[in-house]
Length: 91
Image (cartoon, rainbow, N blue to C red; front, side, top):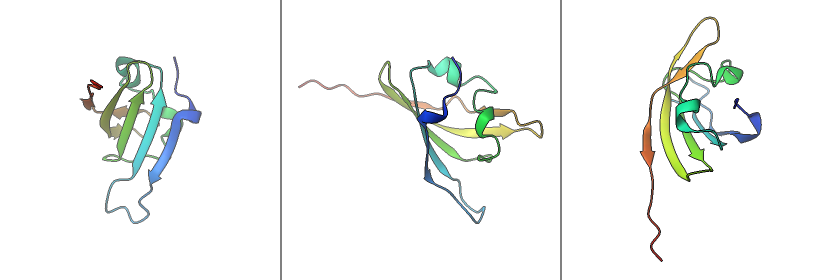
């Protein structure tokens, strides 16, 4: 599937450029799909290298914490593989 702006939210936008901005993204796409270079091209003008993205997989469910690895001059956004956080709910 493709990036959906309805799942994109700004948590904290850094105005000074000294710290990363924080974003969340909710999708039913797999992490492998989301991690593909170019998936976040729609928001290329909003993100910078080092910005953090909390990615919630609504299908699994799980949460991946990733960051923007590169944004090319052509507007291609690539994110790091990230770290998956999953939980067991035994009650």
